[in-house]
Length: 87
Image (cartoon, rainbow, N blue to C red; front, side, top):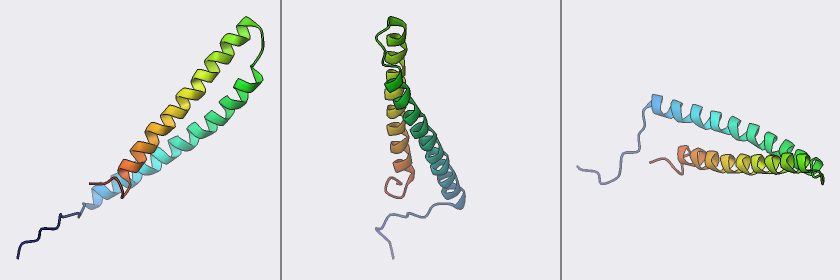
């Protein structure tokens, strides 16, 4: 008898690699979230009217935004590796 259902069986090695990747991505997200929280504080405390501090403030704000973007990219990778994103 033929089955029209798609075979979702994955090898143990594939499952292990995905679990490890999700764990590492989760760790990276946690580190970036911690860094983002510190950057928020630094942006707030560096909001001076001096030109030198203004440049620092703008750079820190860009780093905070980049950090948020990286978290978003990693969350997509995490979703792709999860059961909902697995093929």
